[in-house]
Image 1 (cartoon, protein in one colour):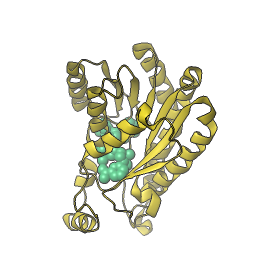
Image 2: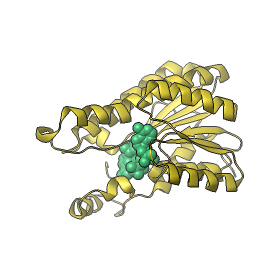
Image 3: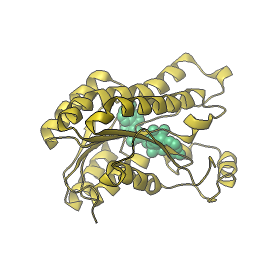
Image 4: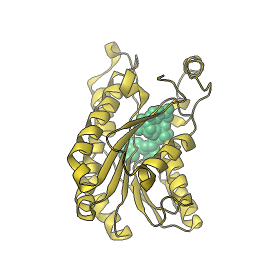
Length: 248
Ligand code: NAP
């Protein structure tokens, strides 16, 4: 059964990692996929070709999610190209880790702008369309770190915790119009973002995971499929942990 046949979705930051995994899973389930990148043009265009070969409409857009103006322009273009937006996935994110003692102001501001302000930019830009349709699903990619904190990631944890407050508020505001808003809190997922971590730190994380393995982008993509589709039609304002039991 295809869960998203003919639905139009937009995913921020899908040139690799979790975003790419979501784009692939959604296309396999019949969705037309608009997605963004900020600098990785070659892999983004490669993904556009790969998704189109599945037989759905797919298009890559260069757009900085931290920019309010670029987000508005992006949604205008996507609406012109695709004719509507049923699902928004706010996935773009970065890390700039350091202990608070060594964290500079720019490292704090950049992480908040790209991870959290972007969610405001994109949600604000799509809400008019979803309000008119009286239907929509918004999924925000938070993190277990936003729930429990993490030494060396005060900026990242603050951005991811902020996304949860934003998610719950939007769910309350837009629920009466049949627009759902949920967050996903991935644990340790093997992507370029986690490749940067020290192997000893990674092993420590793995040891603490009840399922004894790191997650794959497909694990997160499957949770997104559920939250994007009508299977989760009575679920809003929730945080779904996809973490192998890490927070249990
Ligand atoms: P990743 O491999 O580093 O990929 C990040 C993606 O975001 C790339 O496609 C990147 O494209 C894009 N991006 C970065 N800055 C952007 C901007 N300003 N505007 C638009 N796109 C931008 O990261 P990932 O591991 O897949 O993580 C995806 C999301 O899941 C992030 O929000 C992350 O915080 C969250 N998450 C990840 C894990 C994990 O263990 N991996 C755990 C919890 C939560 P460019 O290369 O073009 O910049």
